[in-house]
Length: 393
Image 1: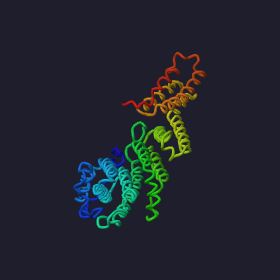
Image 2: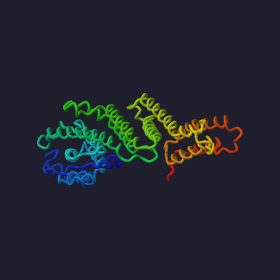
Image 3: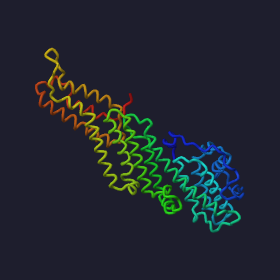
Image 4: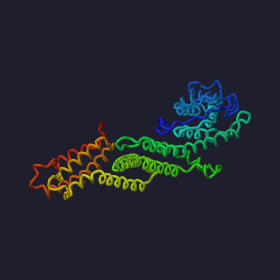
């Protein structure tokens, strides 16, 4: 998995105390069997050595290669299962040793998928514990390692929810764009779906834990993550001024989430009703944005009786409108809607609101003065249809 904007923003800290170097998952010298191709599990072996030596930061730097090497070792186990029993057993013990060592680390949420992969390959059916010899394998140690992996899953998911919430206090993207955490969480949920079976097994076999530390079903995990995400987005939106930009930001981010679900494998987790409800939210935020952002310009078109006296002339309603329109327009030139269809919809919503009001005002008050107007409806539309491209300053 790519570097996490969450974990990179909130640097996870490894324990500083050294780990006893004598412990291993197997308690056997077979873990270091020379039969193993060192290139197949080079980084995993180095991670084990670094953790045992207390150099946890060095272990973390090699983590990105662990998933690939786990898959390579599993492939070796499958291909040589019927012919090279000693080699297969050495690979299995190396995986078990790796699993046992990493549970001693404080794992960040983006390490979850390696842990789930380990749980999959270390399950009793694949590991064939019934064929193990007591003198070279401790069943108690094996069960303990699997339980520690399951608890690591719980802690990583719990940590993810905390990190999502704390991200609200950090800087928000310019121009009401899609937040990096929105992208991260939706991708995270997609990866969780790929591990649905394993998460289901963990949930089904998690009766030994206290109620407050049980692994939820995937449906509940996703529900919790989305609740955290939406709560974070609402808190993050408060950092924006003006208020219209808050609605614009929420519209953008909810639309991104809905697009990730709609027409994809994620629909099986979220359901069509979730999509429908959130599409209604998007529409509400769009309408609120239009009203809050462009309402002040439209209000300038209302007839206003002056109190300045005969010595002072007031600007006409069209002049006031033009000044307010220009101010609003230029403030929003850096705002961005990434999705082309949503961008078109927002532009048209603004045009419908602004141009219809302006056209009605011209028809009512300006029939004899059209040549003096600052804007034509056509010019307004041409300008508005250029918005939301996120132009830089």
